[in-house]
Length: 161
Image 1 (cartoon, rainbow, N blue to C red):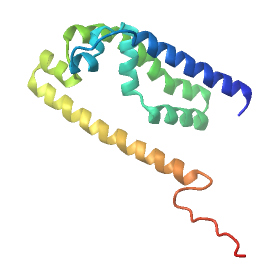
Image 2 (cartoon, one colour; image 1 turned 90 degrees about the vertical axis):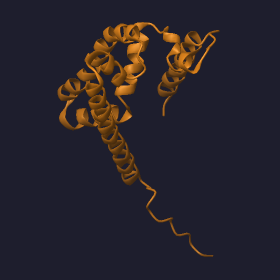
Image 3 (cartoon, helix red, strand yellow; image 1 turned 180 degrees about the vertical axis):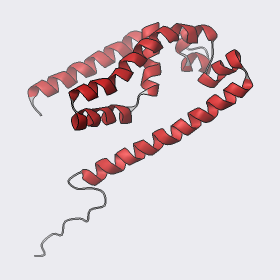
Image 4 (cartoon, rainbow, N blue to C red; image 1 turned 45 degrees about the vertical axis):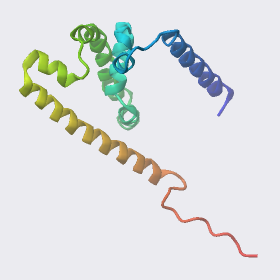
C-alpha cells in the first residue's frame, strides 16, 4: 500500500467523522422512535442516502465491480447506473416518505393501498432478504475459498527437529 492510498483512507475517515459530528451535534433524543427516525429532521439528500445504503449493500457493490471487470467498463457503467438512478429517485421520494410519517415501507403501503398490499409488501421484502442473505453468504464463501490460505486449508506442517 503506497502513501497515496493511506492519504485517501485518512481523508475519508476524517470526512466521515466530520459528517457524523455535524449531524450528531447536541441533539437530544426524547424516545426510541425519535432515535430510530433521527427526529425526522434529516435533509432530503441525507435521508435518500440512508435509504439507498439500505437498498444497495456491499454485495451489490462488489458484484458490480466484478461485472465491470468481466464484461468491460461500458457494461459496468450500465450496471452502476441503477445506483445513480436510485439515488435521484430516493432523494425526491424522501420528502414524501417523511410527510407520510411511516416507519416501514409496508406501513406506507397499508396507508395508501390497504392491508392486502401491506401483507404482499411484507412477504416480498422477506423473500428479498432471503436472497440478499444468500448472496452475502455465497460471496463470503467464495472470497474465503479463493484466498491464498482459506479457512478450510490444513495448517502447514512444521519440520520436526
